[in-house]
Length: 62
Image (tube, rainbow, N blue to C red; front, side, top):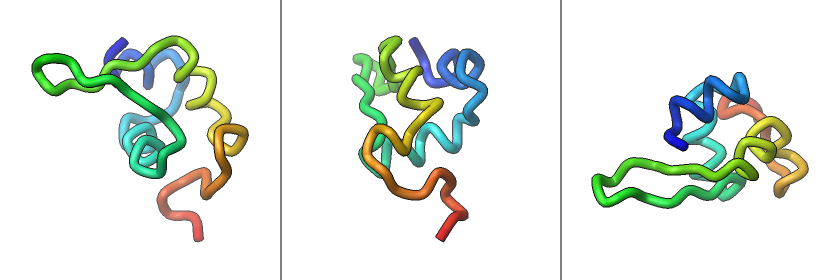
């Protein structure tokens, strides 16, 4: 699924999903066009990123 769909399904903003990916908390595949593509397991991790590897839950957190 695309990042917008993942955001809608999980209630996690697109910005925060991108941050989680930058921090290594979420993984995505890239389509031929360069778009992010996520699987269903990623949706569960997006809701509970601390369980996926720790780190701040929000980019503005210390």
